[in-house]
Length: 389
Image (spheres, rainbow, N blue to C red):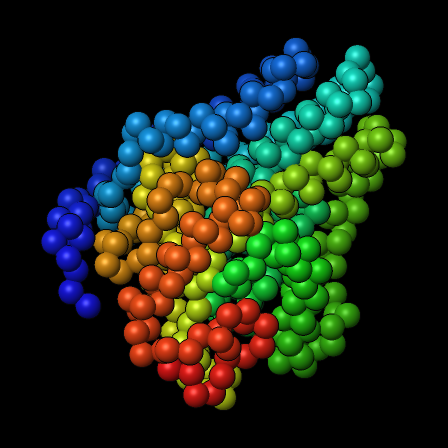
């Protein structure tokens, strides 16, 4: 497909390679003083945490604009120390924020019930917006150290199975009925979220069971990482209980729910309505760049470690975040903003459908003009039809 003049101009405007500067990505650390300030002051200051991520960042995005630069993908890991260090130090920071807050709330006191919940809501926004994004970056890497840091961060939100589900199910099956977190066309988030919460753990268990079976092991074998996920979650819940009793456990679980809600809102946006062509007999076309929604917005991209360059992440899942590429609009469907405003919009399904169903239909006409009957592709609740396309 030939790019239109505007697309060619935008493509030409993408310098390669772009200079590598780590400091913009350290923006996420600014959540830390906000949480500390909210714990110290209480009241109105608590609202600064979600307002910072959901309102201020998108507003700055509007003024700063997009980052259309692409770094040299051959940059060696040794040159990425300051980028990698950011992801390494976040677990101890998050651990102190979460359990420090539980200690202050339950042992120091002085907060109303609404303030307690609001504080843990704000911390859940932080562990979801920052912690899970960092976990995602870490468990995509092959070395033992980083994968385990990713597991620890997912344990902090009681969602350890996400690593298995993401690596063994989402990446190979994105855009098909076998992927839990590909949001189906016309599926509102209020239906998507409980479906994913129910199906995700089952899907992860099946994937690990299949891997163990290929190695001649049963699903209860100690090497099944599901046991690790459960043990880590139990340890952290036990620590919450030791600090604050059942109130501490409730506070910890509440921030975890908020964080997971943030994660699944992002999952919902990333692939909404996008499907891969079914080739028959359970086979699908290879994953392509146009099977993810992309955004090049600079500030939200820095905050989310370039997760919004999602097409390249699916084409090169082991690629480190500062090296992820942005593609021209003729190759990848583009989001109108960064993720934060769109995740808020997803909470209002009628408005979301009005904005995005039209975009999905345009995407279908652009990439699959030969498919005229999309009825079987509508929900992706079962394998796509043998003869489609």
